[in-house]
Length: 77
Image (tube, helix red, strand yellow):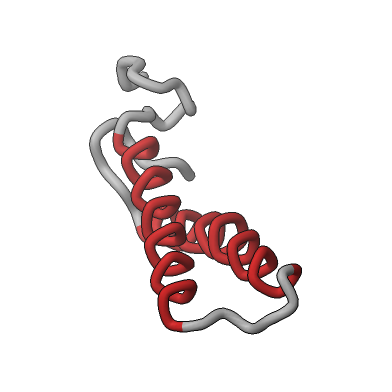
């Protein structure tokens, strides 16, 4: 079940984490590996920032989405 407009549930947080790690984390990690080396300290920092940014973006989108999946729409009773 989707969260109501302006609210988040644990499933939203879990989905956000999965989306963030799956997109930002893996893609930036693969960039380092394709360059022929393991990520160094600054690259791990970038991977972390990209992952957190993706997670926050997803959670902010969820806050503005009603339980029917409409962004900014009124909550249906």
